Image (tube, rainbow, N blue to C red; front, side, top):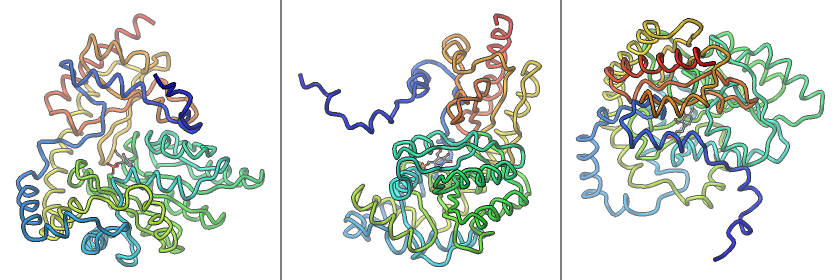
Length: 405
Ligand SMILES: Cc1ncc(COP(=O)(O)O)c(C=O)c1O
């Protein structure tokens, strides 16, 4: 047999299969309540509308919708995204400043591809979205984590770190942030911090990548202004997705920003997949045009608000002393801290096997290896009943772990 190990490229050593993913595979087999993935509630997908639109698209525009399309995305879809962003108060110059991607995950990978040379510095939040860390890592940057608190990334620490890095001759390529309902903490950046972050970016002439899948799901009457809207210097690149506002199965995301970078992204994307699925672009464009997404978001928001509240109430009711958690204003996740002596990664297998409940250990989101006592809890996928039961089981597991350690 061919020695496959010998033929893999060096860079594959930087690609690690997540052990957590392996563990979470068990979840689908056993009767386990999962707070693990970041999945939307599948019962809420607007299935009938999507089925009707798909039939209509294929019968009326099948010759175009089943054909290859332009790399940057089909024109009507980019125009609909432009209108959508406009209504949501997300600044964008025109449809030409938007490129459609195969999920926002592809967008993150392309940004790594076009921006990162080995040894460049990328500033990220501590903790941050694991798959962004993995996407960037392949291009061999130095990933520098800046802590997050209830007001988002700590910009005072950020400013000192940026100054220090520049003094040491480091090349900072961009700051990657999820300012609203962050993954994994669920926390959002305050307006003052947003302004401060942009001031720092301006002072040191840095690009900011704003990843924003969750700002459409705020469960409280608060106003959140995206960084891209506050930015007057065209230094924010806005990344978002249809995965949460419509369906992740369509694999549609987009990037909006300066034309020069959009063009470079388009060239890189050509060799990756030629174009994003034309068919799903037509479907989503029509869903936007017919107001399906506009009607869908508030419905989903109501259900998710109830689920968030159920999880917060259950945490309050069942969690043992010494545990704490962040209260998110929206999004899909709650990050919980157990007492220091608990290693949530070690505890996971027992939780799945004995207590029939799963979560994502927080450590993987911390690029410096800290966060060993944290866990990310998703509240959108499980049912309200499962949330209440699952948190009860989880609390029992933590209590047992505390007694045995
Ligand atoms: C912060 C963040 N960015 C990007 C993504 C990627 O999503 P998709 O590729 O489905 O658009 C996710 C998925 O959960 C996410 O949480």
